[in-house]
Length: 313
Figure 1 (cartoon, helix red, strand yellow):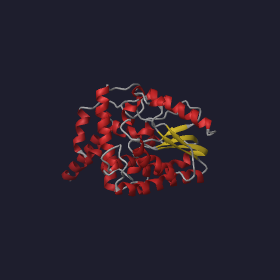
Figure 2 (cartoon, rainbow, N blue to C red):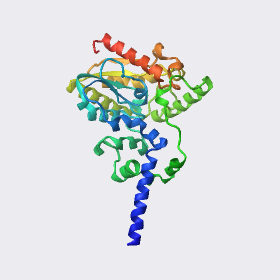
Figure 3 (tube, rainbow, N blue to C red):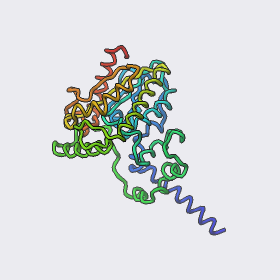
Figure 4 (cartoon, rainbow, N blue to C red):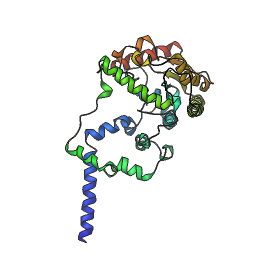
């Protein structure tokens, strides 16, 4: 009987520790990326944006004149973009605008290789939509994170600062630091592309296979929108010239533009801002490629202006 009581008290103490951890900034910072999904997405939306980090930091619909939601999440593959679109399609009004954001290297991979990249989806997607889902991962990642990583208990006693990166208003880095960040981003992209240069015209066989799969996903996303009476628009978000200058035109054509053309059989509008001179200045970014809050408002206004020009607004 005493042993049973001890076990019960230990279980209750463990539950308490998990509750205490979940009120730390460390935990809140980890789930801030998907906080909007946990709270619930609004209904009767007239415009949404889907995509990865570039979409997440690119749009601010709070004063756009329409009911909108930025469903961008960091990071994300086209495969998961489509899953999120299908899940929240019921939240859209008829003729809603769907901005499908296409970063330069997104066609190079079907999903991110590490299983930890799937963790964020445990909070809001159906289990059948999550790659490599199992109940133990759900318990140790969502319900009892200290069970999955007991070292996290230290943040109960010594917390970190709240992450306010989404609200940054200016670039926080000097030229030397930006070059270092560009080197890191270039290395990551080359790994994704299975290439040795962002100026190469060669495409690895495995990457070509991924192109076939990802262009098919984009094609199906567009068809899904049209079938359900939504208005899809392909958007190529901007990056600073510090990063853009690392690319050659032939690389971008092989890895992005050709794939967009293949997938866009329905000939939906394509808004290309990758090297738009209005958005090349580093002052509009947090660092090299994610817009800060000033750049975000400027870009949103530009997209709305261009949507008006094609009678989508």
